[in-house]
Image 1: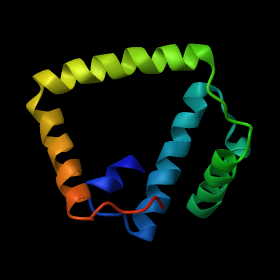
Image 2: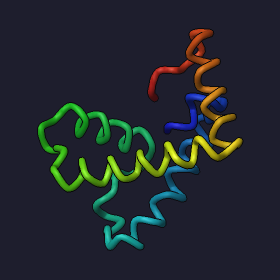
Image 3: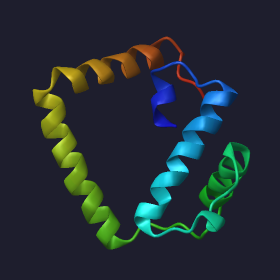
Image 4: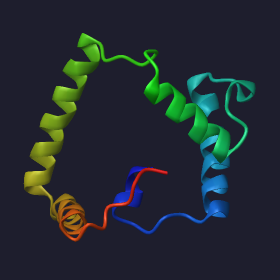
Length: 103
């Protein structure tokens, strides 16, 4: 989870709850519950396997979307004390060697 870069890591119980709650949103995207990994450990293994495979690729339309989103984020960051504060925390953590490895 991206927020663990700047916030304390979740406990194993909190991770399981987070994943269980996020499975509810899958239905909004038409993903059947039976298609989802059962728990956090299975989800982590699936995510790592997908990241290491050739299954996920970046298409031209995804690249264009990323450019639009990053342009929006840069605009937001230059005008938002909240985003500047988060960026500052990330930079401070990185400088102090405090960034955690992904789960």
